[in-house]
Length: 352
Image (cartoon, rainbow, N blue to C red; front, side, top):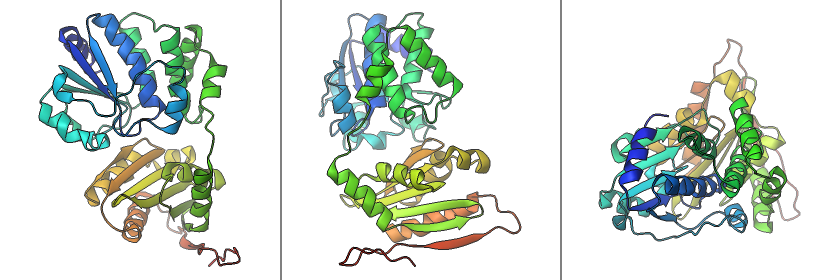
C-alpha cells in the first residue's frame, strides 16, 4: 500500500494526532476512524488522539456510535496537532470550512481513502494512501492491521465489519476481496447479525417525501440501451438516487440547491459500469464539479459533485457529458422519454 510505511514512521514520531472524517461522516468514515485510532495507539502508545467530523456525523453513524465508543468533536483545532489524518475523504473540500484551517496549520497531512484520488490531493497532502480496489476504507484499515502483523480486537473488528456493510450497500457491490475481509472480521469476533441490526436505517417522513418528490419530478432519457433518470429535490439526494436505481434506471442523477450550493448525487447499476466502462467518480463527477467551480469524485457506481449554478444548466451539462461517454452503435437510439410534471391539486401526475 503506497505511502503506508511513511505514515507508520510519522505516527511513531507524533505526540498529538488529529483524525478527520468528511462533513456529516458516514459509517465508513466513523468506523474506519475508530479502528485506525486503536491501530495508531498500538504503534505509538503515548499518542493523544482526537477524532473530528465537521458538522457532526450522519443519522446512521449516530445509531452506530451507540455501541462503538468513539468521541466526536465538531470544531477541532488543527494547529494543536502534530499530524493530521483524514479517512474516507476524497478531497479537503469535503471538510467544509475546516479545510482552510487544516491548510493554514501547515501540519503534515495523510489521506486514507478508497475513492479515486483527486489531483488536488497531491499538492495538499504529505501522504496519499489510496486503494481503489477496496470497496470501503474499513477494508483498507484491516489491511493496515495485517501489514503491522497484528489483529484488531473484537470491538474494532465489529466497527470495521459494520462500516464495510454500509459502504458496500449491504454487499451489493462487494468483491471477492470484500467477502474475504468479511470472513476475517467474523473470525476475529465481529457479529454479522449485530452489524446488520445496526445498519438497517429507519426512513423518517422527510426522507420518504423527498424520494416521492424525486419520482414526481423525474426526467428520463434513453441513450442506446441505457435509461438515464434525472430529478431535482432539496435534500436526501443520495437516497433518492438509490431509489431511482431500484425503480429501474441504469443511471440516476439527483441534483438540488442547498445553502446556495448546487449538489449532485450519481448512482448507476453495476451492469452500466461494466458495459460502458464509465466510472462515475472520475468520468462524470470530477469534470462536472470542476466545470461548476466546485469539486466532484467518488466510486465507479456511486459519486457526487458540488458547485455553483442552476439545476437546469447542470442537467444539460450532465446529459451532454454522459452522451459523449456512452459508446454509441450506428443505429443507437437516443431519445427523451419525457418527464413528470408536479402534481395538480387533485394529486394526479401527468406524463409528457
